[in-house]
Image 1 (cartoon, one colour):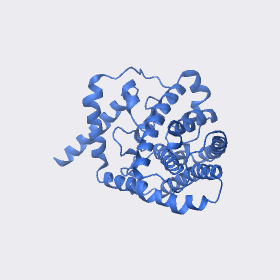
Image 2: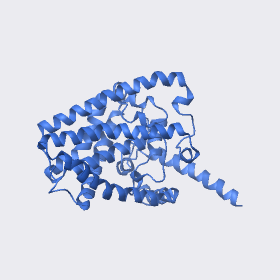
Image 3: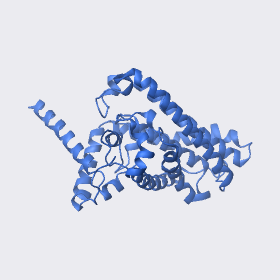
Image 4: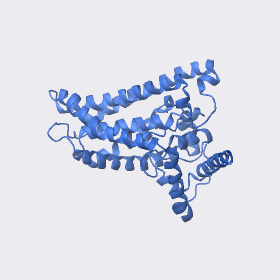
Length: 325
């Protein structure tokens, strides 16, 4: 359980401390920052064209409710399946190219205890499958019970519309996720609900939705859709699909155990990271946000992590300085 003393952060930490952390974070990305920008550019230019001409146009023969249902369900299932498949190949490769981005150098669960992992793997796939089916059910119910959003070709959104609505959804989701996540760390709720997700001391992508069904519904799925519910028909189904893929990719990336320098999810200022979430799993302290560190900083729930990072990279800097001498 979280035992940190979460008091409001000092003004010093909200000014010089935050700016210094952001500078260090971008500097550590190096040339990866360029690739992160390219991936983001691709996501907001090429991918919408694929949605419009290679996917949505094929579905126009169907009724609007079926178009929305198919796009939501396919995004949900393919996003998690393909994302974890990609991570599977990265884990299996054990390539030095990828391994240099590890957030921690301890063994992966499958290397540390193969026999125990085989048992755990069955449990993970079972829990993940239940939650994915639950997600499909929620997509169906949402389509049937809520007002439909735009899903025609004629009102297909511009890039600007997609960007501001996704950023808006990110801010709403991050706020909701922070407070639900922090609430789940209260003693009673942690022991009966959230403890399951923390069975992974070393975070891996497969554990992204290895959660209690109640947590998955109220902590994962609902916060993602609140932004769209606020915007209503102003949001097109293509924007919602891109936002869902972005969020699914972020949670897989955040649980992967790798801090990839080219990750587009960490491109925005004051964003969270795979390293910070891995610290949350390994130390069970603070870092409750999803995309950003705003609430963690305001509420002081990332103080322990900030001290850890300052010490870690301070030591690395000293070692590099000595080598140069």
